[in-house]
Amino acid sequence: MPRPQGQRQRESFHERRERRGAIDDPAIVLNAAARFLEVRSRSVGEVRRHLTQAGYRAELAEAAVVRLTELGMLDDATFARMWVESRDRARPRSEAALRRELALKGIDRELAAEVLFERRSGGEDALGRVSDAGDAGDDNAQRDGPDLAAAERLLGKRSRALERIADPRARRQRAYALLARNGFDPEVCREATNRLFTPGPEPAADPGAWED
Image 1 (tube, rainbow, N blue to C red):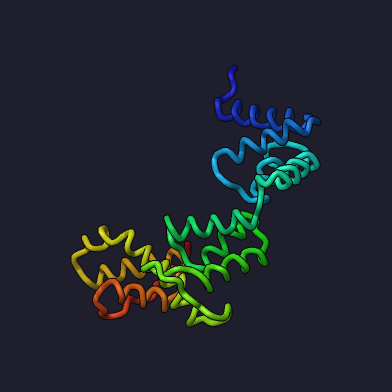
Image 2 (cartoon, helix red, strand yellow):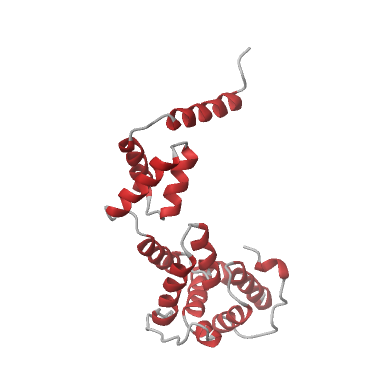
């Protein structure tokens, strides 16, 4: 009796892992890693995880990572900066959200902190002006710097949908919740919402809105 398709697929996956685990040619693993990089830039952690999950032996996966790093195809500092710049341009998020994303990509905490400090101290506001946010521990500077600019850009990208909401209070609540879901703190949510829409009664804080 034929096995269910799902079972055949699972067996095929395990068979592929077993076949890859038997490979002892470093060039094959290096080529697999290079193909993984063809779609987009990756962090060292992403490449290492991809190779080991695919079934390649850990020492060959590590050798491929080392070789790609030597060739300049893997660079966590460059990757982290490109990731943050891409997020700021296409899908603005808060510094806290960016820090979580970099951690998930396997970026070292110290490197993530360095990249985010560069963003905070030398980022651009929504008008393209360079901001001087000051010390890394200055919360006010952070709110008046890249996070507020990013929040305003995010609202700007969703402005058409928000403007279709006739009730001003409901519109502000929707904008506030959108910012909260993207990791912005309450003061940034309030300030960005007030700058875009006429201030009114402050939206009630919804604890669930902070979940991303």
